[in-house]
Length: 129
Image 1 (tube, rainbow, N blue to C red):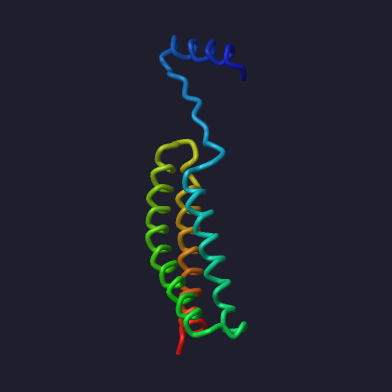
Image 2: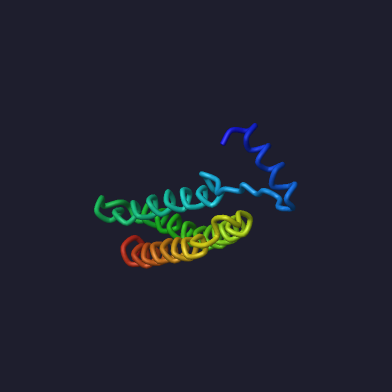
């Protein structure tokens, strides 16, 4: 609907006592930045699991394990931030809340499970003896 027709339609609705509301879901959400950043961190953490295959020194393995611990702690805060921003966005746009809460919970559980698996894998595979 073009802008001129939309304005006329809203005026017509307003005359009848109904205020027009044409709210739509945005094509991008702020929570997408969280998921993108978390994905990149998890990919980097998964790459550190191959450290022992390359016969790296114990100092390097120690540095990789420190990075893994940092990513694990950062993931906790990023997941909390993601859940908060995503929940706020789902309440902000009333036209798209029906399935958003399930999507938010599912994404949070998925990222938490992957982070937990990578944390324990790093503990057993990367941590220097």
